[in-house]
Length: 482
Image (cartoon, rainbow, N blue to C red; front, side, top):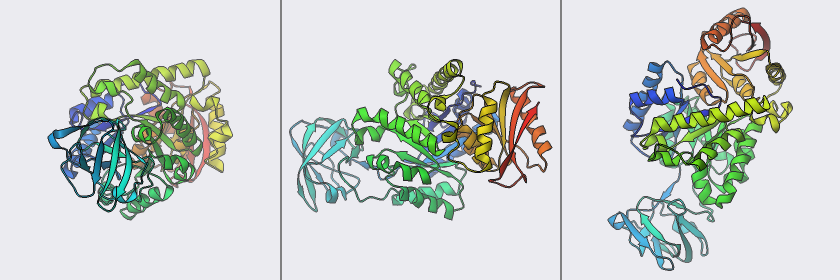
């Protein structure tokens, strides 16, 4: 098994990684959460991936989370003759409402309504911004005419972005609603919502999940400038955010993306929510057995920023070296965390947030206990923290305190144990519901010894609530000698 790191690793499942044997190796290499991308594949393929992930986790005797990623209102170019056409700079090209096999003079898209919303002078970006068009005139309701500003080969199915257009599109398409209902009836821990623009997008998905009886948490993918403007309200209703740097880098100038990443990580920390950094982190390893130095620095900087998790996409979904990519990401995070511990005696937020800011998202006894836990953990005598929790909220609050020691969350609830796999610095395990605090201490000591986090006589902190078995009632902190 890979050495335990505090930063969590999310890996996308695809043709290169969907077999149980490969999934077991990925778990051993350090994967905490698997992502199933609903932009590709059928329901049967998604079910196979989910079943194989759970089977691999059972065989590894590991707890992992599974996240379903809705595709959202992604606009793509329609079919193109010969698979690709050359758009020459300075030429005109028509985007028409009616589907057509594309040529250098005329294409269609998967969203006919864009003809109604774009305006003259606005930019249209194709293939992750590699090609750029400018609308020169509108001919509603049938077509718009554009000039090619930056040319190149355009293949069918490539993405289309409208950074200057206010599209009247819901964040949840009809396909997304069907996929969300399907996810809600199965063993998923998280649902990622693409192209979030406002808080109501998140609450709309929440209603679908709640109606289906799902306890899955919602990850808001931040990939639109509108989401950056509404980030405070989005953070209030989402359970986590994902810095989707691909579309974000198309929708805004590239030099702004690193600043957006740092701002999102910081705001998520202050809001007590998980933050995942994603897109092209080790892109070279899709083909090559080694990353570039720039990619290594990129992953390291996400850890330095204080991200709760870092994510691999094509590297594990379709790449030639999925296990090697996870091992590399794990090693980069380990080196950064070792450096932070050796140089600061503290982790990422220690230099930026006060104890009050760290505990500011919780109130009452839990806030006081979180501050006390951090003070004791930084004293040097405590080896670990154990949080006995029904829902995982206590463990998540302690995670945001960025403790210098590991956190073990014990819970009788399988869903809470799996969801905790995204909490920085937290390892989760199932434990039976007990009646007395002394039983909690005995269970905690037994798990800590099994993990070899502490030896006989060494101190651990045990956080729980009285009466036991009632959620949202954390009020007890015990300094316990193993």
